[in-house]
Length: 464
Image 1 (cartoon, one colour):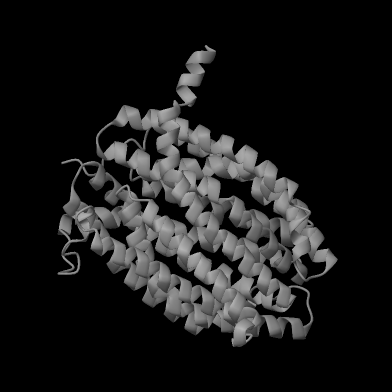
Image 2 (image 1 turned 120 degrees about the horizontal axis):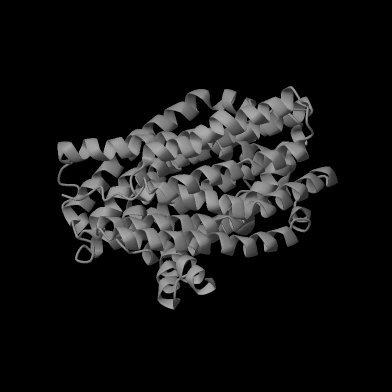
């Protein structure tokens, strides 16, 4: 019995070697990116609480745009992974073109929205307790940071198109290198521009935005140049810009999978933004504390996020190759592996919960609140890992409409209204409110596991 369970839920050495070969480069790239983002946040936090709060609010809003792009690129990426698994390079090329077109539309729309509605959106987060001067300063820093960041929208979109397609084609190392180089460029520019070293102007939070934009152009340059220089290894790039042609029937097939996924990611990110806005109603200090907690959480979360990407790529390729039974077995073992990893990583995160906030130049009240948030996130990490693995499993088989219900609809229809009720009707204090909003994902895990058990995701969407 024990041996049977071990064979069912655990793989051999070759299995984990394959899984880690896909996951580790993504983990390293995202991990270094989040680590530098954390250092960026700490540097701005050393300048002052108002600048840190302004940057935090701007990034919360920009996160919605980033997730919309991720959803659009990932929707076409489902086809890219399965086309690659079936050896159809023309199909990969068409999926890449689809990414470029929808990415361009999103970049134009995102820039327009933030230019027109940026200030009222920022003010939604500055309604809690705080002096008029603190609110005015935070608003000014947030607007300045956001307007500079808009310049980086185009290279960000293009980088996602190139890096995503390379990963779907089995090349995870180059996007990792591009990400590593770009974040070190970001770190260097942060050091020079935030504090004004070596004769550069001390720009504070604006310097952090300039550094991020520069790093995005660097990342794009690396993946773009490498891909075009290695067209023999990645034939999809040959002639990709000669036209925008995509077979009409394929456009419709990709759109049917992409639009629900893009809407899902946008609504999920919007739901998270609303949740943060709900937390902000408990006071100005909560905005800063939540920013500190989110910063360290993003660094640790790269483990289960990378494993989710690995599930999407490996299982998607197996489905595209019509190896359906192997896809089911592989998926079950990858989910188990992801959750077990996060028990360990969550424990490490819990150990630093009281130490990390001390780095910031802020009040003791904010540090204490941030420590509590970090501890809660650490304890809930295995739950988040399981929910994320279920999401990527459902997505790998093209069930994007199902993932929409599973992911964003759950947040917008259940989690956010619950938070609003507990805040405005029950008047619950912020710590138990934050804990409950994290624990509700247990219900999402149950729903996800039921869907996976039913096998509704086991589809080859590029067959014939």
